[in-house]
Image (cartoon, rainbow, N blue to C red; front, side, top):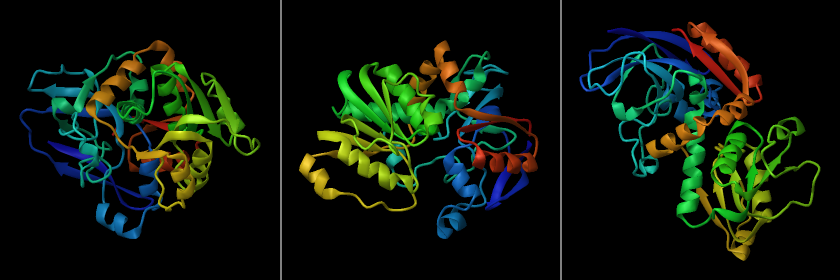
Length: 338
């Protein structure tokens, strides 16, 4: 089989590549149909990673948020034309903490992503979804990361089912998704959003309270905090989280930053705060996210964070989509016809 991949060879440069891929018994042949651009993809595209990292990882196909259709499956697990979620963590994307092992497999990080015409995946790398409304499931990966962070927080006894105040820092796509998942799974806790943009904060209509940190100096206290900012903004967000957390509170850091932030360790010690990092997810988190997206009312909530739908037929279309995504406030959804 000859297939086409689109690879990023250097920042701002996509190149089509044709490869011969032999049949792989025990796997399903899948065609990606809908994808979404992640901030991590943008960091490679714009070259906003250290030079040694870019030199080590490029050339590489991007995109790890994707759904597709099954072309064939000799295992009989899936039927032809069945719509599926594509899991980027490989066959080891199981119930163990495989994400946090050194050099853990992950597409568009240390392996080619889903930006290719077709590819073989094992049944463990696929989750069936309904055809109707299937495009909403392109957000399963992002939602699974939020499910994963919440699950780890609950398993560590840091978050209860009711009676606590959850604070989420960040009014972008990650913050919105984290807030949506928290409200769906733990509706009996009070949810407060901390952001900088009134137009974005208005979209968090399901939250109990929102705070514009540019105008409000008196921040409400929280028991559990999730930092979904990343970048340079993570410095201020972490400082505010430390100030807002009640004694013995807990924070989860989820935003990626290339800039090491200064942290007020004195206040962390004085309050007895707990910090944990959380990224990516496992298959059970994908399954929980899929169940959440199955809920019809969640579709309307997800539509709010779609900034643009773009059709992709070649590497030039992909370049234009990434350039457009830089300006978009939320998610750019790609409909693939490579």
